[in-house]
Image 1 (cartoon, rainbow, N blue to C red):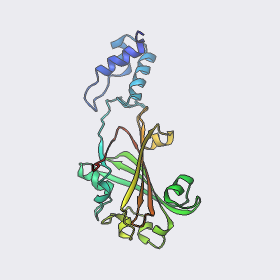
Image 2: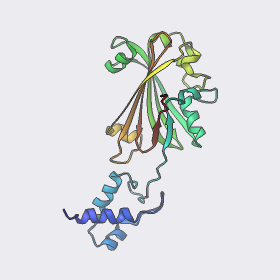
Image 3: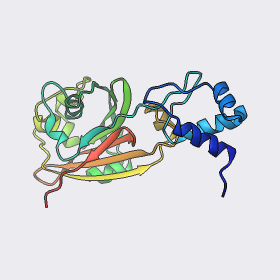
Image 4: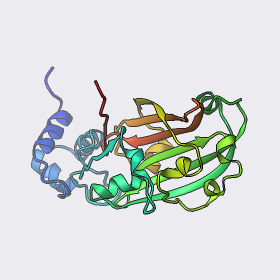
Length: 241
């Protein structure tokens, strides 16, 4: 099928995109350049936004998106805990980024999926540690961790309102060292709330990583769910043959 005028304008703009961060011409300039109506130009720009190639205008100049993928080595990152920060933050620092965490600690009733992962009855009162993780002042990840009562009860470290850096991590420091993990990695489109909190470009998929950590007795000691924009992370695994 022959391309429509909107598709042609989108292709021409796509082919003319400059360096990451560079500004696009104004809508009026694009109308003159391609001999198209303003509505056609706006529809073409919306298509490029949905492809994640340019930023939304929202009253500002549209720009070519600057995309930086931060590596997340799933077999190694939890070993990076120390007194200077948690393991995730330390892996970002090692790549030259500036991380920060917005942490909220809650007591919740375990929903069915969390209860199944932790092998506890649905509705059990448990601790949830909800983080919005940032890199270089850009929202990077929503990370929620859930712990069974036998892990957190009587352990004051878990209830400290700050995001502590502890050698080996909170679990190891409180006698619940993880010896095995079970991971899943899936993708879906984000909810409107997730897209807003992570400031995701339209059309960008959400990666969802889950990890259940087990202690030496085979008991689940943590269930972690991390949600992140697919264009901001590179998930890698090293697997022994």
